[in-house]
Image 1 (tube, rainbow, N blue to C red):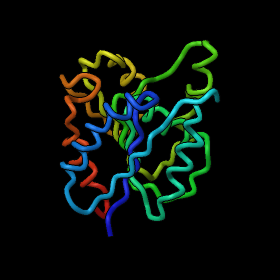
Image 2: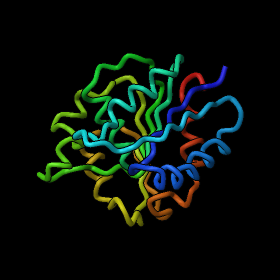
Image 3: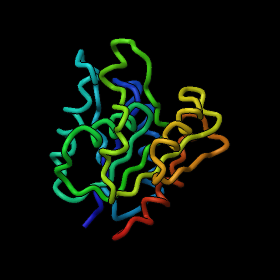
Image 4: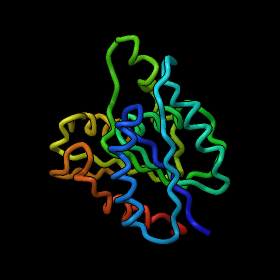
Length: 184
């Protein structure tokens, strides 16, 4: 039976979905047989979290087996928000977060997506979490990874020198790490 992966895009809308489809294809190609990647289109709404939490719940609900969560940019930060604020109803075997922004500030739009101060205390303790970031990321500065490194000391940190925000559309390192999960 195939391992189930849910990949959540960065940004919102069709353009960001199409751009991140290259990451999904790289991951699919690097993983090879034995994995099914679910890649739903996530759209923005007027809700404080852009409607992402409901969309994540809906995407997870159609997957019946254990799941591996992979998120890029906004999708990665929304995985953290979802896992730290909502009870987990499924078996997650790994969490892979790519170019994850750490939202802060007091603007109204940021309040719905920023993490609570103690978010890391509420993350599942028995699930490996991997954080990937490129030093030359032109969208999400590398300092965001440093914040997560401090707040999530048990996470596996993968800092790459180059690849920009989309890792040169190459997620072979992520695929390699997914293959190391117990049972893979």
